[in-house]
Image (cartoon, rainbow, N blue to C red; front, side, top):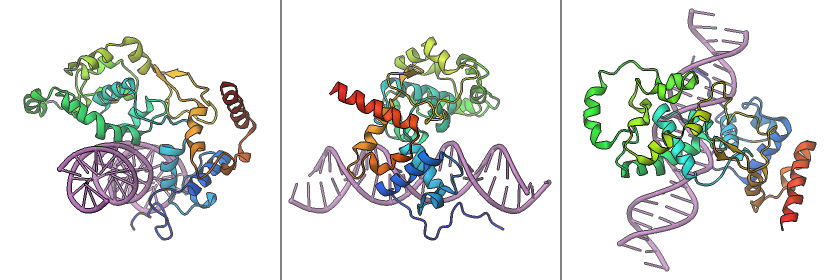
Length: 268
DNA sequence: AAGACCCCCAACCGCCGCATC
DNA sequence: TGATGCGGCGGTTGGGGGTCT
């Protein structure tokens, strides 16, 4: 017997989300938190697959998301992490507060890849392109390696991952012929903060408990403020703050919103 | 002005790992 | 121990918008 599809294909809507659907999903999660995604569509009154709801929330609606292009620092961080982890976008995203794996993956494919090629660096191996032919010859004989896995375990420093890799993408980037990347890799304070043992996943932190107040930093990258994150939602012409059914917010959340509103008025 | 082309990114698809029974 | 359910991940796609001719 085959596996059941993740959702009942009949009557399930696909394609771009409407403002109305977003509202429903936001309302539901603000009220109930993130629980069983499969049940979310039904409980929230959405004709969507649970998977689709999860994706929409994590990639677009989550209030702790940073929006806009990746900064130079973030880009360099992505490059470095990719050289160590390969295409494990969720792991990479976990090191970039406010960024999603989808966003990083997209940015990699549309911007960074081209940039690296232009710089003469192979985006897969992070080796200089003219070395690729030689590297390919030698690669077959390289079978053992722990680089990325040991990184995931946070059991060693980055420089300790440089010896062997099971795949080209997991090679240490120390040999990359990019001055800026080398400079970045040699930023000990930044890197040490990235590879700290027992460091909790950044992205996985509960957004509704630790609402960033703005100006905070993580790994040297500034976190978005609650205000900034709400702004884009509130700017949507189709629905304003009340349309989200914010009456379902708890006191803390409402206080936060009120404080921000007051601050807005003060600044204005 | 309009058609062709390109770029970007939100969303989908299929697979995998883990938990549970 | 295998079947099943679920969440999560990474690859891919398609459509909208921008640019070029």
